[in-house]
Image (tube, rainbow, N blue to C red; front, top):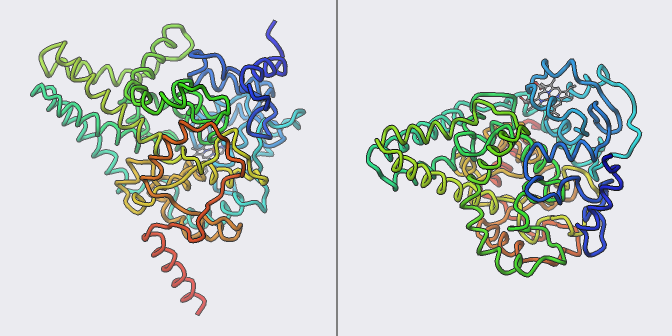
Length: 476
Ligand code: HEM
């Protein structure tokens, strides 16, 4: 017989919190996410969502706040696509539901699907009070998005499609001329493709999300491990992007961090990042063979690339070596940019640090993300380096081309809630990632933006001035 949720979590608690603390982020009902300590078996999206289903413990319905809904008949009609509802059956989707829809009309549909009240406490520390930071910001953002739309504009669609065209041209050039330089160039462009297509897999189903599958990663898996895990429970034990790198890279400032983590992983992590795409690919192949993961057509894309390179180069061995060079370079670029982009710095919240007293989901997101000052204002730079990341975390389904329009209202809301929002220089974020890897000292205070004078990119300061001018003119 399977152990009960509480028995399982107390076993895990013993193996997790060697310093005697329960779940290091207060407010989670379960001490240690089910499966988190299961080693390699736990490192897939399917395992993560299966663990969440056990921990949420609500049967086969969907939970939003303290109410249970039956969305079975809505799955096929959902404007965001079947995937999100099909995948989350039997889980608490409060964070996903709240952050995916800015349109207030969506919440009004829920009573149609109401079944009953939940009998247990939510397994999440986060709140969405109507007068709190996040819901206030959402209300202010909606009139802007209603006007400009939430989807991609022409510029970003052209940018995305051009990356793919350049990638294919480099791939063929590398194969024709047996050029490892062109193969690595194709790898660098593949990193750009992955970074930008990630914007598309957060949205309703669309063909550009499958560009992500040109790498050895899969958009369907990342919708779970990134969209439903990392985005909603950033830097906590439920963040898959924290647990998947453990034990090789341990970002949590666990006081009992192993000496190898402190001193070896800041160097050895580069090998992990180099092999990350291959590990992702092998895990998926193993899961498909074992029957725990469904094969989808997009999984074949990297194999098609490899076959094309063999065919055009006229040699199986050369084509394969060129393909390997391409995958290694894309893996390193994408994974390294990913870890230094926005989430790992001693000023940023990680489980074990002291948690803020107001657990508003939006405020907790601000604590777990920092933006780079240098890339802001350039669609090209933000598209390849996860820029405008705070706004992206707050509104993950809003296209990257629309996010910059939200800065004035976002900063105004920060001011209203006494948040001294500030960017960081890119160099500090890079160094901070290595410092965080070595750190075993939890922050004794909740995170805050420490500067008296917030650091804002010039483009945003100008935007604020323009906004003030238009408001002033309107008032006149
Ligand atoms: C796991 C939870 C959910 C996720 C991740 C999700 C995701 C999404 C996404 C990505 C979109 C497209 C957004 C856009 O184009 O701007 C969307 C739209 C929409 N979703 Fe969901 N959804 C979820 C649950 C629900 C539920 C429970 C309902 C209603 C009962 C719902 C109703 C809608 C509606 C009406 C739209 C269209 C909104 C509009 O046009 O403004 N969704 N959803």
